[in-house]
Image (cartoon, rainbow, N blue to C red; front, side, top):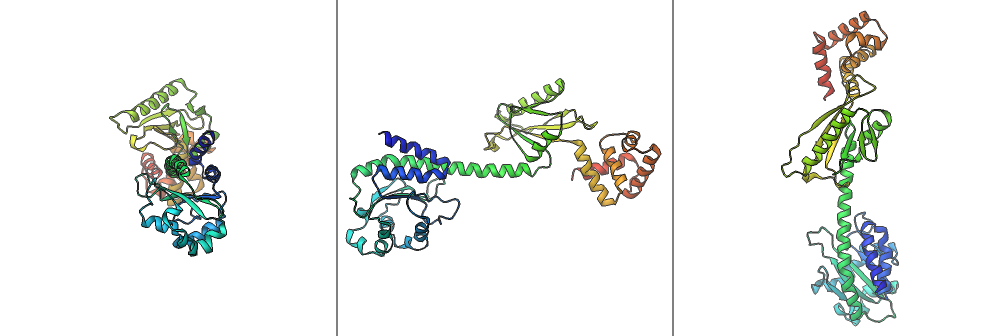
Length: 379
């Protein structure tokens, strides 16, 4: 009983790691006193990444040879299909589907199975590929050696105990694979964003972020992340951020979900314009598989956005480097006089550059220029 429990434990551990299946199959083989064993997805090449061919004792080249040619001469499977035995949970032994005389005269035995020192079989269809679980057709086979006895009723009873656990394990494996694929999709989506993006769990703690956010927390000194909680250095800003996060998480869990964003401004020590944090609940039907995200925060740095807009306008209207720098300063919210000081030029020079920008962009006033820069900023 102790060895059986250990095997079952190994079956479930393997659901999350395909590298554990060969060892688990070896334990199943030993439990049934077999010579070799195999867990496999028929009609799918072992080289395919999504398939499952696991054996502690059958060489890969022999498995490939089976897929390439010998599967069409596999009397055990051919006859089992003819007898409608390839059904989820169904167990059969080799002597029940093919006679000794037919087996020993076959190409299947003489050219393939015999050189693998295999003579007997006990097999089960873990999944026939027809259920809603999404698990593809999967078989488990334990093989007896050339000099071994037939598998008996006791072996079949052991199989009856093991097969449901293998079914559950493969269902979990399929779910893990699906979740990993969704996780990679979400990760790619997050990393495609130009602004820092944070995912929040049901406690309002940061549970994931994109690559831009990683760099953001390294290169600025206003927002801090400690043990998953987002902090600011200003008490009023912190209170506003905490309320926005709590509301977003609560909205996600509400049966009357409404996608309403809350904007929180946080001091930016590197600019006169604060960071803008958009806190938004995620729809209940789109919970992230990465731990279960409930809300999302997008951080916008007006300084970076200003540079992006000014760069686009400068390239399109062929502004000089000095004219572009003035546009960036104006977009950051600095008055013309302050911009002149920051750029190390006189107020008169700043006015002359502004007039040149007006002329090149066909703008008649500073507000009109700002609208143009803001338009290109949002593209």
